[in-house]
Image (cartoon, rainbow, N blue to C red):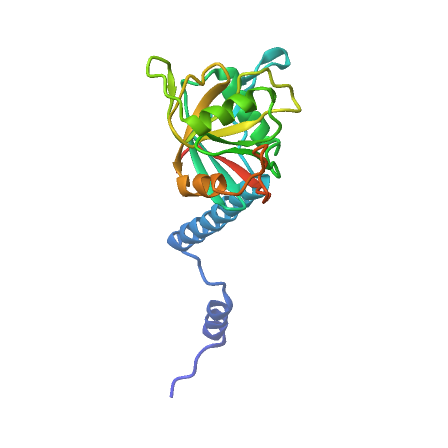
Length: 229
């Protein structure tokens, strides 16, 4: 049996103890894995930040501190104690009314707002009515179902607010429950209900007193703005 020379043993020992070489393909694979993991963490963080932040800000800041509304949402969902009402916002509505509505939604103004007036066959109204004197006229129209074909007409299930000037502490919401003629002097519509008409009708069906005040309180629980549904 041939003897292995000491020098050959030393060379074999060094070969065994030497570090294994890492191939370029392995390095590239691990770099890609790290990138994918980092991107996943970033995407998750962004998603939860949006969830916690609530509604989107549909405005951009202009120079000199002025705010210009752009890319306004297309829909608003009113979550009530009777169910959800989805409204498609009208791009043809007066911009000042629509922009103020969106701004108040973002500030949570409508959360907890009660439907304080229910006129059968006419409208349901949330918030303080800015012109209480028109309530009597509404009650009369609701009972008689007056129709003036020559007048501009508001369709049923339209979302609007009173024509009177609203300040930062007031903005009433009205949803028509039947096609109504000759209402443009007191209401400006800025959206139409596309889902939840049964919820509107259920609220309309609540018993009221002689002043059209509902005997059962129904509130808007939450409001969310959406670009698409």
